[in-house]
Length: 109
Image (cartoon, rainbow, N blue to C red; front, side, top):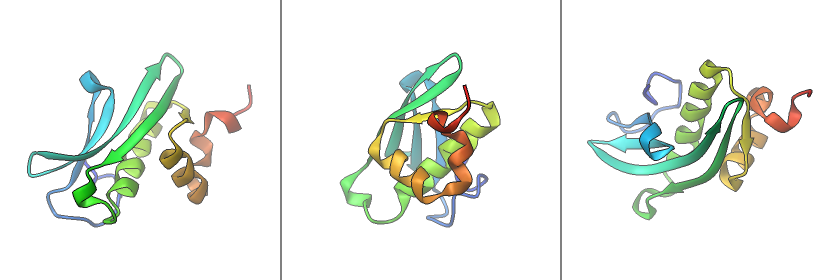
């Protein structure tokens, strides 16, 4: 999975978002270097995003938004709802109503 393929928006040509399940996080990578990550905990019927971090050297370039968009696009393909306990993911989802269907808290139980 790559940020370029997910519609995550324009960025550096080499930016890509990958799932690193062995570290329980999605990473945004450029030229082999991890620029940031969105940590998650995966349960049987749910994925919880717990923390998002971008290297301070790259803050303010829109990497966090591209990272979250690509991660949520990937989660959507898995058919899992998202519980965004991370304030950044929660805020991003609130600003993008086209992702509201993924929010576990909004789903009927």
